[in-house]
Image 1: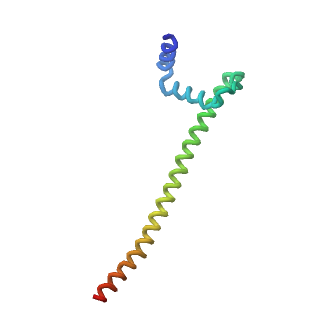
Image 2: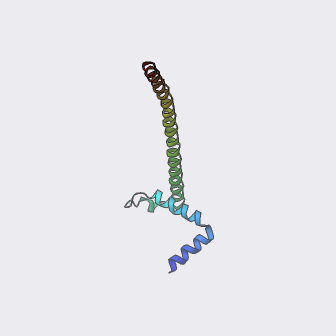
Image 3: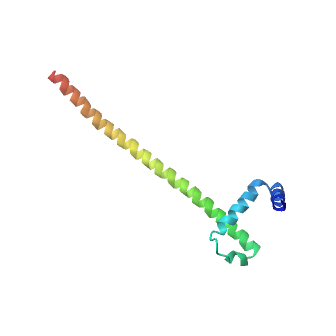
Length: 105
């Protein structure tokens, strides 16, 4: 079909990643399905909106990953600290119990 040939030509000229990023920017900038306010914008304003939407998407993604890694680090640190304190008290009690048991025998 003609549309497929056009899309293939655009992808061949600009590159696959550029076309995908452009499409993602359009999809992110026009989140509301029935909002047609973007139709009255100039091409420059549409490009700015697409760029802003992509930057916000990347910022949110990196912030989410960063916060997840911080939470994971805190959780692992607390787990290791608690395991060390639990093991030292539990092992100490276990040694006392076995010493008492051998003293009785």
